[in-house]
Image (cartoon, rainbow, N blue to C red; front, side):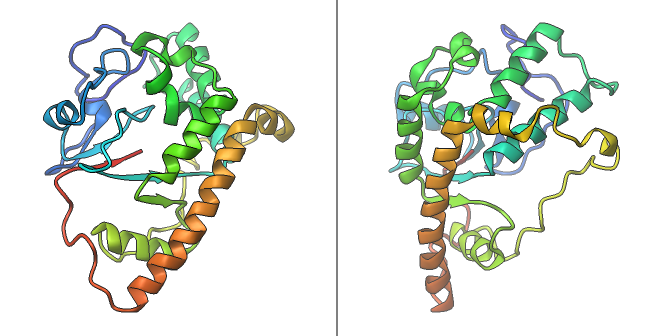
Length: 249
């Protein structure tokens, strides 16, 4: 099943675009954005979610640092915003697009502006049906950076292959270096891959995300040196198998 955030009120996700592995399940396979519960405790979170959670749209609180491992993939905010918009725009020309125009515009606005800051804080500051309308401010950026500082692993794939391998090693996910990021449908939409707005506009729209991203990069740099030295010292991986609970966004 897949969770479509615009289908508020649906009890069961649709039977498309989902996959399952043992202890490995995306959050969008279980809940729509509008029906996802507000977890009152870490025990409730563990009882109602799979062992490995990929968070759709936003990070779930409370943070259960003693029960779960947390990891995040970050991306340069302007490139992310442009890619997000182009992806949504390209979907309009396919047979799979069924998003109403009003909600398409709402989702577009959410993805354009400080989406990383929003994703890291929305569950703290808004109820389910109000999350999409939350506009991040300075306070949200500070909370987002504090949250990232508590994560176990932060990665920006393909920036440093040695770092990628070391982090994956200590996550217990293997030593294979992740291939450089490529858009699987780039050939199909090649003609559309031009920013709809000048880059300076996206930079202004993502000013908070830029700060959060720069902070994340500093954390990544410190972590990379640590994990690479540890791996090169022939230390055994901290986690030989996926732990019971592993959360990621």
